[in-house]
Image 1: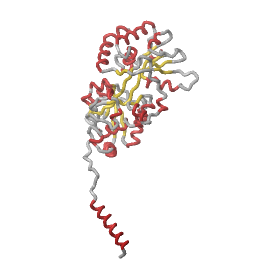
Image 2: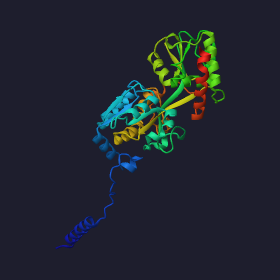
Image 3: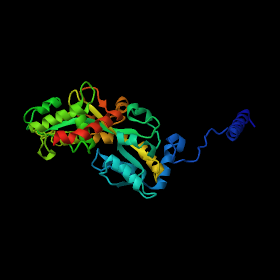
Image 4: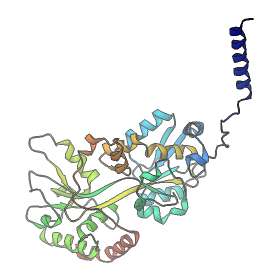
Length: 360
């Protein structure tokens, strides 16, 4: 046997010995826990979460119409990607109604997740299972429960939508007191969150809300004949994700029928938050849904629905923001104000006692 052959045999023997004795570095994953508080804790990998959700087969939502901030596209994309059927009960339910539905649901038929106004979420924190999505750090601290019970998914700014064929562009709420403006709120502020926030936006002064100022503003409109029902109005105070789609429909026309501005000096923001039902019948699917909602794709789908995704800043920094969709939203003229729970409670108490008397 030549020296070269001896060397070759030795190399093969060494390689075989090395393969047979090499220590394994693959970490054994713990059993799946579909009610865990994070992806890492409950599943270890995204693939295992997807597998667990597919095994459950379906997801039940409540209070999310398909035509609300592009939710139809979000649901379809989720089902198409993961093979999990999405069922929606009472699509038009208010935030409080979502909680009531969950309370009354028979065992195994409750909603898995909620889409709620922040005030309702805070009042019902004990009903939610804590879960921190992988993108947790991208969600601003001011709009999430630091223990993971609820966290903002998307939101918007109170805006003024108007018919430019009938009235000039308003810069702020004070302009709406001028002749020619027929102003509406999207409902009764004692019952409708958007109308309540419209009153509170009009109340802002130096960044501070005061329900009395908002009531005085709409009281003045009422006495002058400028406060109307939506069907009779040429101006609507509502969220920008309601006014902006309407404006986009005629944006390219020679004479657009609708435009939208966020009023200067009255930049009021609000977010809808996500929460997992503590008694979710499909806990893995609920957690997969949350991971999907906070991914780049779904956050941009909300943006295409004229809502502002909670991860806007992170998307922008990473170059993932859909700039074409973002360009369709009205610019924000100043620092936003988000009402605190005490401010909201105080304002609701005041309006409940005084709105009907002033606006009769």
